[in-house]
Image (cartoon, rainbow, N blue to C red; front, side, top):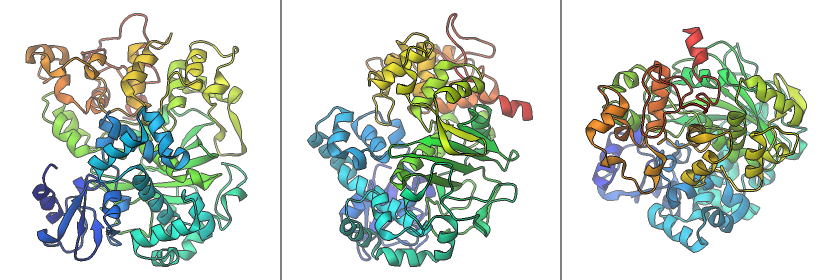
Length: 568
């Protein structure tokens, strides 16, 4: 939205499509909200608009206790943008400022700290410190309202440098003390059942539960799932969400020992190990079983809308050896499940195309899965073959869990552990480049530069590099244009006839699908109009039955929708 009047119309209609895209504050109450806040709409003269929650907090407004604006899905704009601000926002979300400070963020971006501060403040109304502070405050609220951790341990786990800083921030943003926030959740007993009363150092390993025993009650999930333990979270998304398709995607390519999927289709739980900055962990995410009654849970990363076209959430549990990794783990899961996508914008663009329109209508909310660990995905993709081939690598080089948990037994090996002479090519060359920093695949890397570097490695090639750009780097604008379009070539310079010729009869062409080409590829895969697992070459969208160029792998991993095809 480009003007305040249009934003006010969204607030008046309580339009959840714009949650996370902007925030509004009411000067008479000193509170800021999400656009879909159910409270009485304030008068226009009393409303101010902000591009980020951090900007509203910096202006002196506190978070609304009714709509919890700090818990909205992230803006899809940061996944699309390749400029300094977009890259910085992805890195801040990954916890770089907490771990490395503003100087570390600036070094990763290749700019000076002053330039980063100036550009973020100009566009978002807040600098990197304020944006990271808002992220820490939200993490602290989640821990306060879902765990029984002592406040002292909780503050440092959320990333605060001191107890005083923690207390001051909570009072300023939530207009209450930490104890008041915990009491307001009304779930002190539930918190004790769900999570540990001891600190992170007491957890023996990522396979150990953080809770003293099984949880009970309505939050425990379906009877077909094991009783959940760990920190309970609800990972919010906007709009429709094609959950069955994304769980199919993950199940068919799960690497034994690192990932597993339990339960029948429609009630599955995806589980995997995580290699994190301060330790390791196990994540569990439940497949939504169907609509639920409308209610606002006591805490977590939650969208208050009912499951369906207005948004919803995925139930998640995290067990971590070090709670300082909580925000990073959540962000990685959000990328894996593509929870910050804007399905409304995708449907508006792709739905207008004669070829894709019926596919979008048939499968609303189809997502483009990312990666929980970009380096892991790169190794698996270049290694090729079925998941069992990567599992053999895991058994040989991966770090075993202290205590195996079901089918989870190892962490996927880091690149440095796979760069020895005994590792076969081309995996060794890739891991050497990742380990020495020649190629970086973090959240804020220059996607075009990374794609070119990957494509230049032996055994990779442009199609595999494009696949990694789409999944490992989370770029939604992949698969519809030549790599040169990122630099000097104007994608709109082609004629309509040329675009239509490349896309096939009846289609407006790949240029018209931007910036949502990745979603177009997934729709084409799902419909069988593009061979499953095949990334289209530069400037083309292959038709049915067309294969990739000789000498280059057409499917870097198992066909992503093979399981769905077998099950009908």
